[in-house]
Length: 526
Image: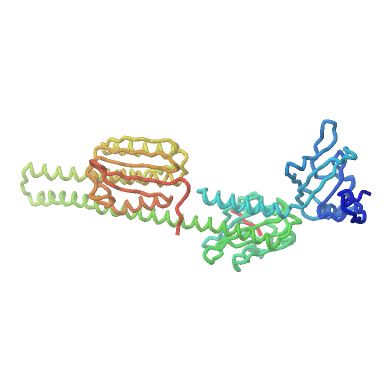
């Protein structure tokens, strides 16, 4: 046996020789010898522990370590000096799968054999996956426009990060019914809710309702075996057999102190639900709650805008059309009174009254056409998107009013998501409507393009202009219409500026960043 101390050239301090097989037995990392085919030959005690206590059954079993071969067919591993460990998975005879980081080296004494040093990195990689999942979800929630797509993506991230069988995100409506908002790992049955209600009618307990009631996470070990043995769950027995799962956890989605839904996690057989797992699920449930809350806020804002637009139309009807129709009625009534009295009216008087009725009727017709024009299908109904919708708007307005339009449509509009395009279109349409109704213009110029990460659009005219920038004077339309334009732009972090042109007319300038919105104050299991 070589004395390491003596080989190092110590000065007289002779230490006892140490057998290297004893050193290998004390190493904290796994050390194994494999043959050319990658089969285990020997392993130190640490390796046996890491491999799940395979013990005497280990020799001759295939290892999970990838071996390459040199030109002579001898196995060898990647050189240590590249600083890279390979990672593989190992399924022990009992217990959960493990992830092992390893290095392979050929034995100098026998190149047909290789030594493998390895360690368990399951927990380390698990933490990394969870952190990556939370980061990706944060990016997804800020970049995606569809809440359903957001929550499906979040469920998929949770599923992948913890290697779960399935994940579901559900919300509770006003009637107390559960509704799926995001799912991963499970198929959907069209009649699932009917079956679930039948389970509850039979007395089957949905443990996720406990999470909703207590606003605390609920963990149920071996939940599937309990469901399988409960006759009340018979309507969903077949459903719960695919894919295979065992334990169950339900974490509430808390929105301003109220449990508004749950995140359900279904664990594969052998998986345990520890404190760190619950902390991760709680963090992801918080992200899901933000998405659900944001969707509710957005829907309320949309409803408010729709209500305000209806009120504006009602006001316009009263302020213009109703008054004009009333004037037509008064003119007609005066003719009727004269006719009943048998009064003789000069031809020029009859001609004047008829002319006034004709002018008023034409004005009413134009106002009604303008309102119908505003209520046409939205930009999302146009196959060509925002550009086609703006061109159609200009064409219809020109045919109806005789205004001349000049359009400059730049590149990039096709990349704008549907909801933003809808708001941009409505802002442009409101600006054009104001020109028609108030500006007394002959020509309208509409320009739009995407530059420097922003959508920029302008609507300018050669009409009478406004008294002061943004004052809402003549040519700008009603203050309510401008308010709606500002709100639509602010929803996306943008702005609308109304100002007089240098010579004549009014300029409406819209700017919207494309990075994101502004900050704003069908099945389930278990």
